[in-house]
Amino acid sequence: MEPLAALQAAPDDSLVGDSREGWVTNRELLSRAHRYAAALRQVVHADEAFVGILLPPSATGVAAALAVVLADRCPVFLNYTASREATAYAISTCGLRRILTDRAFAQAVNFPDLPILTDLADWREAPEGLGELLALPAAELRRRFFPGQGGGDPLRPGTVLFSSG
Image (cartoon, rainbow, N blue to C red; front, side):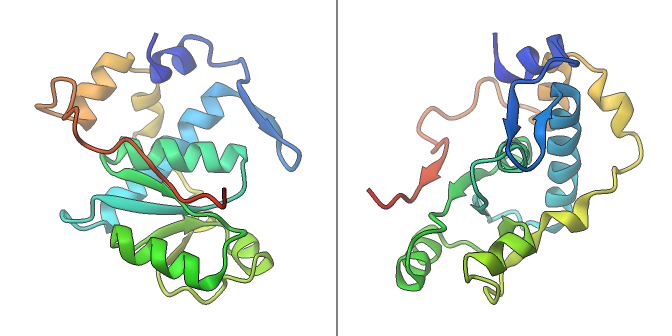
């Protein structure tokens, strides 16, 4: 079963949790992902294939990753323990113009001044009509969000991960 369908099939179950937020229901996870994706689609340019993510392993991080994929972009997971030079290299290598984060987290890991940061807290409000979208089957969501993509390009990157190891 594909991930969206699995999440939709059990909306009141929780597959993701962390120490800050506790367990998050699949419904909330999908709601956040779609909310972030809708906002992301409004601000990314057509030529932005990659979107950075600077978040700890967390429910918000999972929602951000799903959002980037739903916005038809490739998530780039930045290593928040890396040096400024390593982070600059990752940003340059992928041509990042936007990095999704939590402003407080970015400050805590000493990356508060990156000019391309987007604070996910700014996207907490759901756009109109989101509730109806969440009730749709995964195949219909895929058709609406990815028109004309019969399975996608097998050579397109699925994700980019910059790690320290």
